[in-house]
Image (spheres, rainbow, N blue to C red):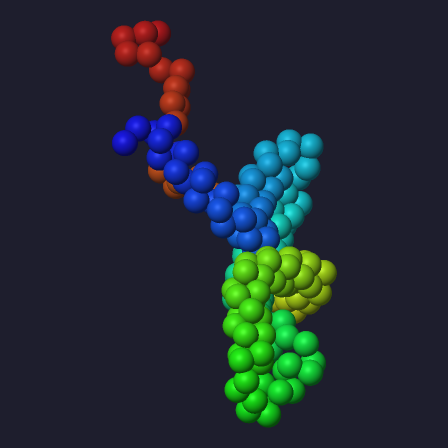
Length: 200
C-alpha cells in the first residue's frame, strides 16, 4: 500500500469520526507540541521567561487532553441515557406502555420510538460531545490548571532560585579566595650574579 492510499484511508477514518471531543484533543496535542516550541524559539525574550512560559503552556495542554477525553466518555454515556425509546413517545403512549399496556397501537408506537432513538443517537452523541467540550474549555480546564499548575510552577521557580543562589555563593567564594599559585611556580628564578667564568 502506497503512502498516498494509507494517508487517504486515515483521513477518511478521521472524517467519519468527526466528534468534537476528537477535534478538541487533536488541537490540544498540536498546541502542546508547537506552542512551547515557538515560545523557546523567540530570541527577544530571556531564557528564564521563555522556559517558564513554555512549561506553563505545555502543562496546560497536558491537563486539557485527558479532560477532553473524559468529557467525551461522559457525553457518550449521557447520549445513551437520552436516546431511549421512551423519550421519543408521546406522554399518553409512554404512560400506557409503562402501565403495561400491550395493545398493538402501543407496541407500534414503541417500535417507532425505538427506530427514532437509533437514528438520533449519533446526533445526540455529537451534540452532547460539543456541550462537554465547551464546558471543559470554559470551566473544567481553567479550574484544573489553577489547582495543579500554580503549585508546580512555584516549585520550579523555587528550585531555579535556589540553584541561582548556590551559583552566586560559589562565585562569591571564588572571588574572596582566589586560587593560590603553586608553590613550585616561584622556585626557579634566574639569579644572575655579576660573575662570569673566566671573566675579569
